[in-house]
Image 1 (cartoon, rainbow, N blue to C red):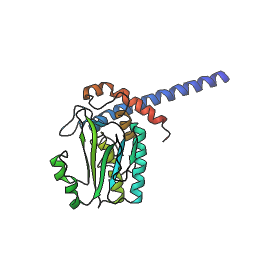
Image 2: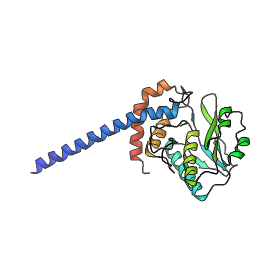
Image 3: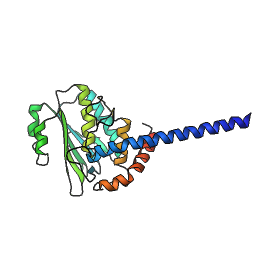
Image 4: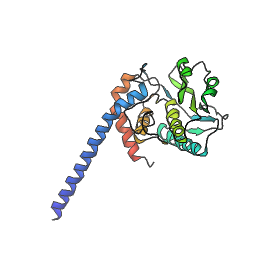
Length: 243
């Protein structure tokens, strides 16, 4: 009976591996259009043909009142971003930007307080006029590297909505720019569930965007050729991650 039992165990192991591979391939196929919407704005009015992305250490500089719960969300999120991007990400005190860091200025303000905060030449006029519940904008260097950004969140929102906006806007400011309805739950889905941490699919998208070999300035066509492999590697790394 030992040999038949060993055979059955081997067959079960092979079947499990085949099922996992099939599920992984299906997830890669599902994530590809979401990646294109998030990174290139493929469903938006002005799709991009190149990767715009931060490169190097990041400091998020909060300004305005943050509850202790929101500060904890932001602290944990900074750790997640550092893990997924491979760059140091820290929360500053509003002033202490260090050499080489890319500053992202985070404001919590009521809508009536926002216009002066949006008075930066590199923030699109239409964005300044729209005044949504939350927004981010950034400026790039000539090589398509994001060098700094501003994030505004409506202070009058509920605590849960503020937490979602903190995750969404700080992530988008680094290069995962656009929303998508293809993922749920997700930080990138404005019509889905409110979240207070990046979701599994979000993490895979970010790992792929910041993978070795991905760089600001890469064309969409070049990324598309490699995207299945990038997502497959990101899925493997996410499965191995202790978090």
